[in-house]
Image 1: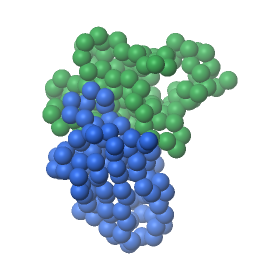
Image 2: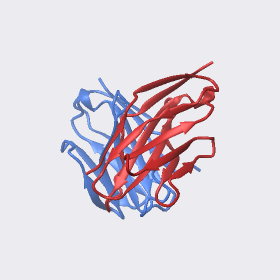
Image 3: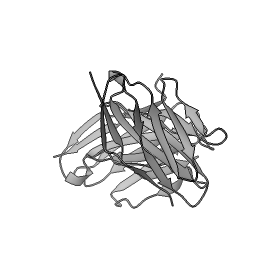
Image 4: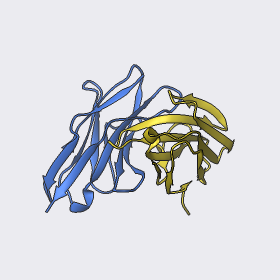
Length: 113
Length: 113
Protein backbone atom coordinates (compact mmCIF):
# COMPACT_ATOMS: atom_id res chain seq x y z
CA UNK A 1 0.00 0.00 0.00
CA UNK A 2 1.15 3.54 -0.59
CA UNK A 3 0.49 6.83 1.12
CA UNK A 4 1.21 10.50 0.50
CA UNK A 5 1.86 13.27 2.97
CA UNK A 6 1.62 16.89 1.94
CA UNK A 7 3.23 18.71 4.79
CA UNK A 8 1.54 22.09 4.34
CA UNK A 9 -2.21 22.49 4.06
CA UNK A 10 -1.89 26.17 3.09
CA UNK A 11 0.96 28.18 1.58
CA UNK A 12 0.45 31.94 1.17
CA UNK A 13 3.04 33.80 -0.91
CA UNK A 14 3.41 37.11 -2.64
CA UNK A 15 3.41 37.44 -6.41
CA UNK A 16 6.81 36.83 -8.05
CA UNK A 17 8.15 35.07 -4.94
CA UNK A 18 9.48 31.49 -5.17
CA UNK A 19 7.43 28.66 -3.72
CA UNK A 20 7.94 25.04 -2.70
CA UNK A 21 5.07 22.66 -1.98
CA UNK A 22 6.28 19.61 -0.11
CA UNK A 23 5.28 16.01 -0.75
CA UNK A 24 6.54 12.82 0.85
CA UNK A 25 5.37 9.35 -0.01
CA UNK A 26 5.69 5.81 1.25
CA UNK A 27 5.48 2.68 -0.84
CA UNK A 28 6.83 -0.85 -0.78
CA UNK A 29 7.14 -0.95 -4.58
CA UNK A 30 8.49 1.29 -7.31
CA UNK A 31 6.29 4.30 -7.78
CA UNK A 32 4.99 6.74 -10.28
CA UNK A 33 4.52 10.26 -8.89
CA UNK A 34 2.22 13.05 -10.00
CA UNK A 35 1.25 16.60 -9.20
CA UNK A 36 -2.27 17.73 -10.04
CA UNK A 37 -3.73 21.23 -9.83
CA UNK A 38 -7.37 22.05 -9.06
CA UNK A 39 -8.64 25.56 -9.74
CA UNK A 40 -11.81 26.63 -7.87
CA UNK A 41 -14.90 24.67 -8.89
CA UNK A 42 -13.01 22.69 -11.50
CA UNK A 43 -11.67 19.18 -11.93
CA UNK A 44 -8.07 18.14 -11.47
CA UNK A 45 -5.51 18.79 -14.19
CA UNK A 46 -2.22 16.97 -14.51
CA UNK A 47 0.66 19.35 -13.84
CA UNK A 48 3.64 17.02 -14.15
CA UNK A 49 4.66 13.44 -13.58
CA UNK A 50 7.63 11.22 -12.80
CA UNK A 51 7.56 7.74 -14.28
CA UNK A 52 11.25 6.96 -14.78
CA UNK A 53 14.45 8.51 -16.08
CA UNK A 54 15.47 12.04 -15.17
CA UNK A 55 14.54 12.83 -11.59
CA UNK A 56 13.78 16.47 -12.44
CA UNK A 57 10.53 16.97 -14.32
CA UNK A 58 9.03 20.21 -15.58
CA UNK A 59 5.64 21.53 -16.56
CA UNK A 60 4.85 23.93 -19.38
CA UNK A 61 3.92 26.74 -16.98
CA UNK A 62 7.19 26.93 -15.04
CA UNK A 63 6.67 24.39 -12.26
CA UNK A 64 9.22 21.66 -11.62
CA UNK A 65 9.48 18.73 -9.24
CA UNK A 66 12.35 16.52 -8.25
CA UNK A 67 12.05 12.85 -7.37
CA UNK A 68 14.31 12.02 -4.45
CA UNK A 69 14.24 8.30 -3.76
CA UNK A 70 16.41 8.39 -0.65
CA UNK A 71 14.19 11.01 0.97
CA UNK A 72 10.98 9.59 -0.58
CA UNK A 73 10.03 13.08 -1.67
CA UNK A 74 8.62 14.78 -4.75
CA UNK A 75 8.53 18.48 -3.89
CA UNK A 76 7.00 20.98 -6.31
CA UNK A 77 8.74 24.29 -6.95
CA UNK A 78 8.30 27.43 -8.97
CA UNK A 79 10.88 30.25 -8.96
CA UNK A 80 8.34 33.05 -9.46
CA UNK A 81 4.60 32.64 -8.95
CA UNK A 82 1.71 34.53 -10.51
CA UNK A 83 -1.68 35.33 -9.06
CA UNK A 84 -3.14 32.87 -11.56
CA UNK A 85 -1.25 30.04 -9.82
CA UNK A 86 -3.65 30.30 -6.89
CA UNK A 87 -5.19 26.84 -6.63
CA UNK A 88 -5.20 23.58 -4.70
CA UNK A 89 -2.25 21.31 -5.51
CA UNK A 90 -2.37 17.56 -5.00
CA UNK A 91 0.53 15.15 -4.93
CA UNK A 92 -0.31 11.56 -5.90
CA UNK A 93 1.47 8.22 -5.99
CA UNK A 94 0.79 5.02 -7.87
CA UNK A 95 2.51 1.72 -7.26
CA UNK A 96 1.75 -1.84 -8.17
CA UNK A 97 -0.23 -3.21 -11.05
CA UNK A 98 -3.69 -1.78 -10.53
CA UNK A 99 -2.78 1.84 -11.35
CA UNK A 100 -4.62 3.21 -8.34
CA UNK A 101 -3.64 6.81 -7.60
CA UNK A 102 -3.44 7.68 -3.92
CA UNK A 103 -3.67 11.40 -3.29
CA UNK A 104 -2.32 13.61 -0.55
CA UNK A 105 -4.68 15.95 1.28
CA UNK A 106 -3.76 18.89 -0.92
CA UNK A 107 -1.97 22.21 -0.43
CA UNK A 108 -3.82 25.44 -1.05
CA UNK A 109 -1.43 27.88 -2.70
CA UNK A 110 -2.61 31.46 -2.40
CA UNK A 111 -0.68 34.08 -4.34
CA UNK A 112 -1.24 37.61 -3.08
CA UNK A 113 -0.46 40.84 -4.97
CA UNK B 1 -14.69 17.89 -27.36
CA UNK B 2 -14.71 17.11 -23.66
CA UNK B 3 -12.37 14.20 -22.91
CA UNK B 4 -14.13 12.99 -19.74
CA UNK B 5 -17.66 14.27 -19.28
CA UNK B 6 -19.89 13.83 -16.27
CA UNK B 7 -23.57 14.55 -15.91
CA UNK B 8 -25.12 16.18 -14.07
CA UNK B 9 -22.73 18.88 -12.87
CA UNK B 10 -24.92 19.65 -9.85
CA UNK B 11 -27.36 17.39 -8.07
CA UNK B 12 -29.52 18.41 -5.12
CA UNK B 13 -31.75 15.73 -3.69
CA UNK B 14 -33.50 14.66 -0.53
CA UNK B 15 -32.37 12.00 1.90
CA UNK B 16 -33.59 8.55 0.98
CA UNK B 17 -33.72 9.18 -2.77
CA UNK B 18 -31.87 7.14 -5.39
CA UNK B 19 -29.73 8.96 -7.95
CA UNK B 20 -27.26 8.23 -10.75
CA UNK B 21 -24.24 10.05 -12.10
CA UNK B 22 -23.04 9.29 -15.61
CA UNK B 23 -19.52 9.42 -16.99
CA UNK B 24 -18.23 9.05 -20.52
CA UNK B 25 -14.71 9.29 -21.93
CA UNK B 26 -13.72 9.66 -25.58
CA UNK B 27 -10.00 9.12 -25.11
CA UNK B 28 -9.98 5.42 -25.87
CA UNK B 29 -8.70 4.68 -22.35
CA UNK B 30 -9.23 1.22 -20.93
CA UNK B 31 -9.59 2.08 -17.24
CA UNK B 32 -12.10 4.34 -15.50
CA UNK B 33 -12.44 5.45 -11.88
CA UNK B 34 -14.76 7.11 -9.41
CA UNK B 35 -13.29 9.33 -6.72
CA UNK B 36 -15.06 11.14 -3.90
CA UNK B 37 -13.82 14.55 -2.75
CA UNK B 38 -15.12 15.59 0.65
CA UNK B 39 -15.61 19.07 2.04
CA UNK B 40 -11.95 19.19 3.12
CA UNK B 41 -10.86 18.47 -0.46
CA UNK B 42 -9.64 14.96 0.41
CA UNK B 43 -9.80 12.64 -2.63
CA UNK B 44 -10.54 8.98 -2.06
CA UNK B 45 -10.89 6.29 -4.68
CA UNK B 46 -14.15 4.39 -4.70
CA UNK B 47 -14.11 2.11 -7.73
CA UNK B 48 -12.13 1.29 -10.83
CA UNK B 49 -13.05 -0.64 -13.95
CA UNK B 50 -10.65 -2.00 -16.55
CA UNK B 51 -12.31 -3.00 -19.82
CA UNK B 52 -15.68 -3.30 -18.07
CA UNK B 53 -14.31 -5.41 -15.22
CA UNK B 54 -14.25 -4.19 -11.62
CA UNK B 55 -10.64 -4.09 -10.41
CA UNK B 56 -10.78 -1.75 -7.44
CA UNK B 57 -13.59 -1.70 -4.90
CA UNK B 58 -12.58 0.28 -1.84
CA UNK B 59 -14.53 0.27 1.40
CA UNK B 60 -17.69 1.90 0.13
CA UNK B 61 -21.26 1.33 1.41
CA UNK B 62 -23.29 -1.16 -0.60
CA UNK B 63 -25.64 1.70 -1.46
CA UNK B 64 -23.06 2.72 -4.07
CA UNK B 65 -23.06 0.59 -7.19
CA UNK B 66 -20.94 1.26 -10.28
CA UNK B 67 -21.92 0.02 -13.71
CA UNK B 68 -19.78 -0.06 -16.83
CA UNK B 69 -21.78 -0.95 -19.96
CA UNK B 70 -18.66 -0.53 -22.13
CA UNK B 71 -15.14 0.71 -21.60
CA UNK B 72 -16.08 4.29 -22.49
CA UNK B 73 -18.76 4.60 -19.80
CA UNK B 74 -18.79 4.25 -16.04
CA UNK B 75 -21.92 5.22 -14.16
CA UNK B 76 -22.45 5.50 -10.41
CA UNK B 77 -25.80 4.69 -8.83
CA UNK B 78 -26.48 5.62 -5.22
CA UNK B 79 -29.41 4.21 -3.28
CA UNK B 80 -31.01 5.64 -0.16
CA UNK B 81 -28.95 8.82 -0.13
CA UNK B 82 -27.68 10.09 3.22
CA UNK B 83 -26.49 13.52 4.34
CA UNK B 84 -22.93 12.20 4.52
CA UNK B 85 -22.97 11.40 0.82
CA UNK B 86 -22.79 15.10 0.05
CA UNK B 87 -19.50 15.62 -1.79
CA UNK B 88 -18.01 16.18 -5.21
CA UNK B 89 -17.71 12.98 -7.22
CA UNK B 90 -15.06 12.83 -9.91
CA UNK B 91 -14.84 10.40 -12.75
CA UNK B 92 -11.42 9.77 -14.31
CA UNK B 93 -9.86 7.58 -16.95
CA UNK B 94 -6.39 6.32 -17.76
CA UNK B 95 -4.55 4.16 -20.19
CA UNK B 96 -2.66 1.08 -19.01
CA UNK B 97 0.79 2.09 -17.82
CA UNK B 98 -0.31 5.50 -16.55
CA UNK B 99 2.04 7.24 -18.98
CA UNK B 100 -0.35 10.16 -19.07
CA UNK B 101 -1.72 9.91 -15.55
CA UNK B 102 -5.43 10.23 -15.06
CA UNK B 103 -7.74 12.52 -17.00
CA UNK B 104 -10.47 13.83 -14.73
CA UNK B 105 -13.97 14.99 -15.44
CA UNK B 106 -15.14 18.32 -14.06
CA UNK B 107 -17.00 16.71 -11.18
CA UNK B 108 -20.57 16.32 -9.93
CA UNK B 109 -21.43 18.26 -6.80
CA UNK B 110 -23.98 16.18 -4.89
CA UNK B 111 -25.91 17.87 -2.09
CA UNK B 112 -28.23 15.77 0.03
CA UNK B 113 -30.78 17.75 2.05
